[in-house]
Image (cartoon, rainbow, N blue to C red; front, side, top):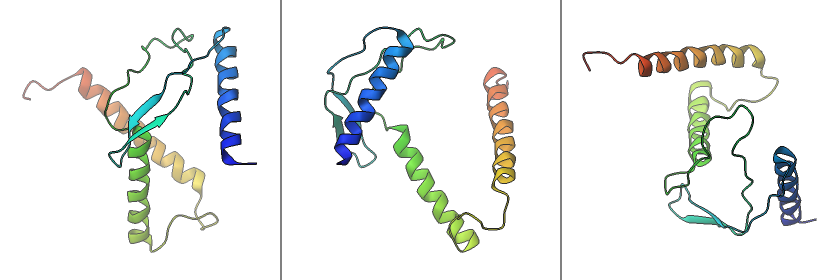
Length: 131
């Protein structure tokens, strides 16, 4: 079977899941467009957008589309850059069974992330008087 077939199946399952989440029929035919990291406009024709407003516990508004970069593309660029850093630093890309404990490495990185996030939260809630 072609990849298009599996993509159509995935989209159908996404609609079913959205229906189950909201208990109502979700359908639509709006095109989804975005500016790619290559500067080109990309379109997914007729891809339905599930209604997700009012999800229990979600107090934020639905995202508003714009002509700014797609975050996934920025992450892909960052991943490629990190791959190059790793190759330069360690002489090879990260691979499984490399002698390190991946869970410990990830946990320690997560702890660092938590500290950086807490710093950002503190700084946004407590701006310095001097600038």
